[in-house]
Image (cartoon, rainbow, N blue to C red):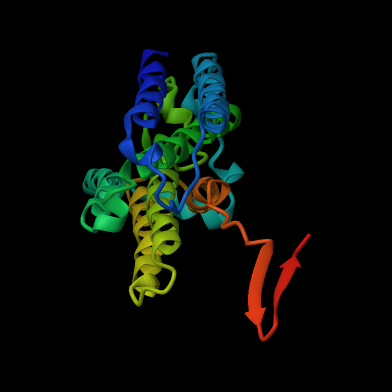
Length: 262
């Protein structure tokens, strides 16, 4: 719970003290204290529920499992158990969470970096909350457990296969960066490359999680979908809507033309 509190307070501090939130310059994303309290509070509630349910995970022995219960599509994952792939997947996840720092390179995004950080924090909190909640409900044993001694009692982490948290976290971060980049630079020629990177990085992470014997293919697919949804949705919910001018005026010979659009 303390970790959750720190995340929540950090979001509020960034919201209050980021100078770009108090300027009158045109912003790509609109933030407000009320809206951010709702989003971050909802994410915190989901996160807390997932943690609570995970603490109630019942014990289970490997001898109680049946390999035949695993579908053919997923069964390939039980053949793998690569520590190297697991370490590499940690690296791709960490790299993805550092991607928002690239917005410090350009002056346009640097001026609104505080807002970007708030949105990124909300995105990752929501994604982690849903990830933990789904894991604690499904309680699916990981692929590698089938190679352990049948008398082994599974731990909570051994029953956290569905869905892939590494994949969902990487997808949430990379798709968030792609969506925000598109919001700031809709006409950039780099857009296709940014989206290709956003799509490829979580796919690589998912592949590595399968090779590591930590997840089944369906775990990875579900994690990819969840992370991509979170990474796209949070920025879109905050997208600035330019107000159209309702009153237009024009002069012509001998008079003034006025039009008001309702």
